[in-house]
Length: 146
Image (tube, rainbow, N blue to C red; front, side):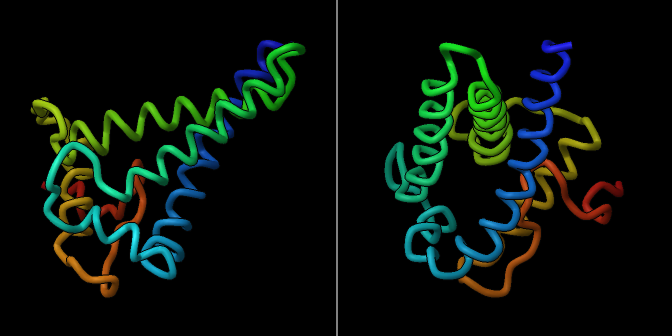
């Protein structure tokens, strides 16, 4: 039973992270934290961008949760694990697949193509407003039509 509960915590955390990421992206990154996030909407001049600080912050929080929960493997460890897995998903989808920080992999998969289209539309604007499609794994149905 404990194993199922821990898996449930991890999966719920991943789902929650998508919701949290969407809200933070829309209301904070395209709001008061735009001065940091705008580096992500501009052409990159090097390996890192100031916007990467957000990922480092989430990683530090996840590691902290895992550290304080590791002795008893309590819920904090599994929440930290869920945040870490979401971070890996974010890295693969966002940095590697969408933004080609590494050699891109190509896919004809309808879901992946839709996510990529939605994100490209999000980056069409280099300004704080207007913008749309703030999620990573979830986007409007219109981007999935062929």
